[in-house]
Length: 339
Image (cartoon, rainbow, N blue to C red):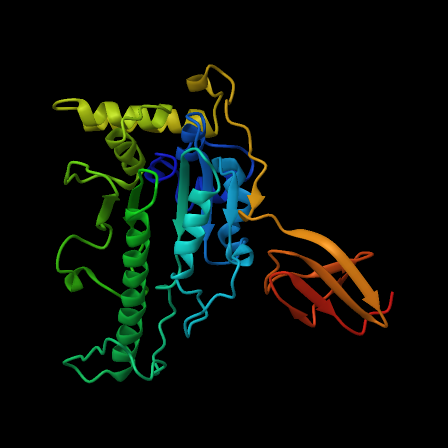
């Protein structure tokens, strides 16, 4: 919804365009719209490239590059649940911003705060200790674990904003959560809002008027672009027009939105004049090029010299896969090799 401006309420039960039609066709999105304005578009995700089919879907959402866990340069520290810690994301975001002379759009998905949340004690010296009034050790361990993951995610956000504050280009950072933790939270547990609302934050490294505005997830992209003075893309312009109308008819707005969405994704593309203007991108995995410069082979041992290897690097010779004996950023070694 944030990337495309499309309202998922308009589709049938269990139907998510991301999991169905977007495997076959493109969809107007923030990356496509900004590409037409000279932006390079990047996705960053500290998890596997195939998670939720992102490697297959991102080309149809207009991304030029996708840096997943497998393409991050250093060995990534993981939390007790096996999720890569979010601290790795700062360097990867900055790498995207530094990779071009022009403007960049970077969409980052973090994972550190995800469950399942362990009922046993896994943090021996937690920074934050949660104490419950009721005697429920399992629940207390879950909440202690979650609170400490969120604490470390806060440190990541602090470091990211510190780095962006001094970055040599104007930057806008948009942050939001896309779901609650799987901790059985109910409406009565909420201090404010409900189970289906979340705070979002706009932060910039330049002076920008502070505004407080409630928006739907499918309106957020249009709202941020409006703040930037960008009025491009059919769905985004449609939402921006609704923002500006005094006493706008919400029912008519929602009904027409559904018609536009179905025409764009399943119909005759009449909204584009009958032809889809967005072609799938030739997605490049990672920002830095992986190069193989030189190979030495002697007495069953092979040394491969190059750049940007990591723990996920493998070697395929004559169609057969070999696991490296050891590997570093610039060198892979394979032993007991018979050619």
